[in-house]
Amino acid sequence: MGSFIEILCAIFMPPVGVFLRFGCGLEFWLSLLLTFLGFVPGMVYAIWVLTK
Image 1 (cartoon, rainbow, N blue to C red):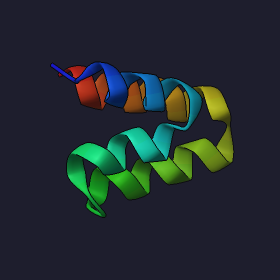
Image 2 (cartoon, one colour):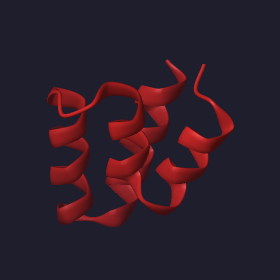
Image 3 (cartoon, rainbow, N blue to C red):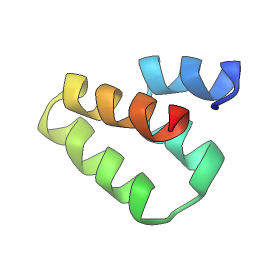
Image 4 (tube, rainbow, N blue to C red):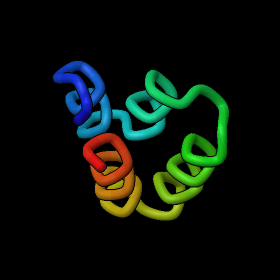
């Protein structure tokens, strides 16, 4: 389960929230790509990755 700060970052800045947990791994780059394609997909992915 993600911490409150990570979830809060995932809502407002999705790649930052993922970076806090995983660093510059695959999850971060996928979150960054989805955020560039559309903010909502990046946010949904970030929250999903942090809470799984």
